[in-house]
Image (cartoon, rainbow, N blue to C red; front, side, top):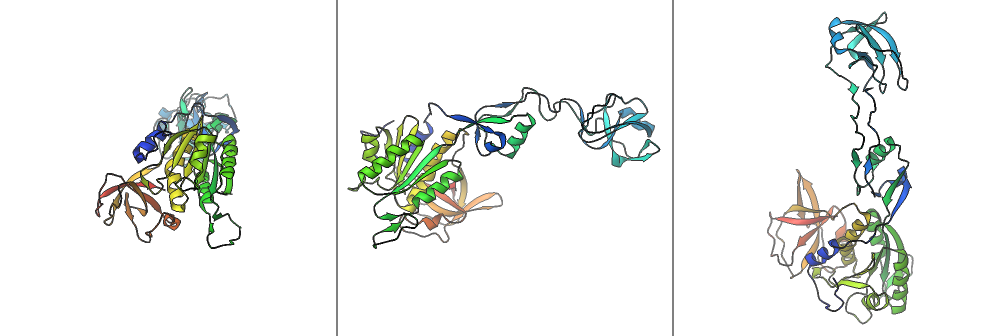
Length: 407
């Protein structure tokens, strides 16, 4: 879908549907050494190449016996079976073999009686407490069976996935490459870290660093482009160079309707990208532009700190998840609102709130949150969520259940 001709504000639901319907023509993969793959997404199913265990094994230290011999009360110890050894002796009636954790269960036995259940005297065991049939023996395939799909494609790799793959002797694993996100703040009035303010009109930019932190937190790699002056040549060079080395290019500022807002024109005229939409009926961040060129995306976000943060969460994270191939989505939960909250505009509104979990149920309030412009980034501090008020919704009453984005 393109909004090149019809420059209109679409609904939030429509804008998200467009993102969700995007199909990447090809997702790149790479092979990594097993433990280097932590945090990546698996690019193919992991299938068991063998049974685990492959043979009956001991689950603890004890004595391998025939279950029916428990009734004898006293058994002879005929051999010792350390872990890692493969003994040839078998368990016969009236006899037992001392067997250690991880050892193969000797032939002829069907049960293991633990050492704490017996008394050893003169190379015999006296059975003090009986056990059930098959006690402490691990059956073939107890852990997993040959040809079983153990980890599905699209799974995020953590310690448990590493452990299972190590047990399969997988040295390298194929994963989806992490998306590369280039981030820049545009504006001749803004200063980067360390730059000295020389007039009162200059302001310190936090946008590019805030967004870098979010992208990294959610698994993307970031090319930080810093602060770029608000002239056409600078912004054009930024986007042209970034689109070559990145999957997603994000700028903040320069997307509204001002005389110096070049981003939207550069995206369409110089990059030749297809504009998926330009303008969404949301607050904050209505002047957002999302464009696609092949499997690369250019997103222009508003310049205010709170606006750029919220729209990055709403629009860039779904793209990051799509590249990662793990089916992850932005978490939205039901929560009970603790006080009345008015609907102030006919837009879909996202409002920072305090999000708490009490006795298994989410609650929200706005204690300490400031009212004002879309520049108040401090409202994102703490255990925060984003209250969603649909464009067609009305005032919210205390005690009602609402939808909240979990940050």
